[in-house]
Image (cartoon, rainbow, N blue to C red; front, side, top):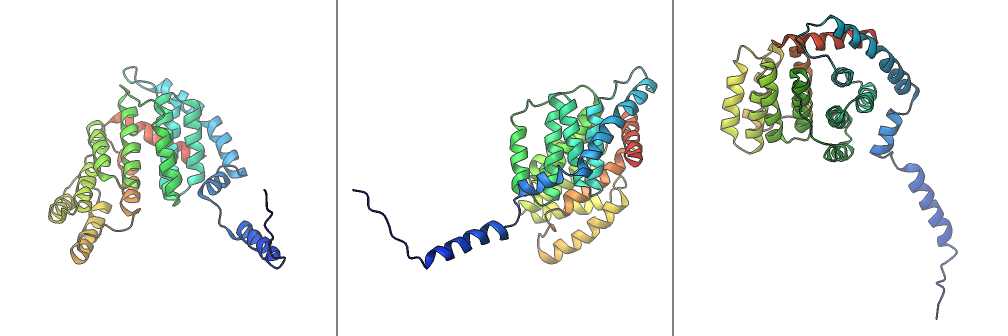
Length: 280
């Protein structure tokens, strides 16, 4: 036999007050913040502008390149544009480029667009959303490419995403491939040293950092940062600074180094994309 429960009338107003408080006082979820960033006038206006401007720029570049070089895929130009916006602290524009790359590209570009989007999410502090995005990546067929510039972009984005996830063991694997394509080897050496520090191999990691700080091929900005971090680590016993310190440093310096890469095609593509970014 069903028996109705009787609640005190005094509790009913309190219940509705609590319900209203929960509805009004809660902060936006990470998903809601991401949707805000990718649904406004700025996002849509930029996405339209970039979608219209990039195609002609890539076609002009391809018409002037040497016949021995493969043509540039517009989706990769969108990925490099998005990488530049991420480094510049403009995640809304980076998210727009990730969407454009995913919409215009093949499975390789779609795979990398999720990496670019996840990096932007980590930058914003949306860690759970970023992890979900990187999990979604596993549903996309893993790419392979014969074009050197495509392989370099792949290794760069994957290496950086793993660094943001603090999986430096995997990160250095991708930076090793990046070094093979570009002859820029310091990201691998740096992530290798950080991996040692994270695994409590303190002396080994410190030795690698000190060697790297004296490497003439290392950018001066990194040498200075390494000197400061070595002092901190020696004083604090293994502290590798904030969660975003190393990924942000790597991403900024790699973009600058790519403009001077010994891979002439990759350097020219990055310079073309950076010029387009300034115009947009």
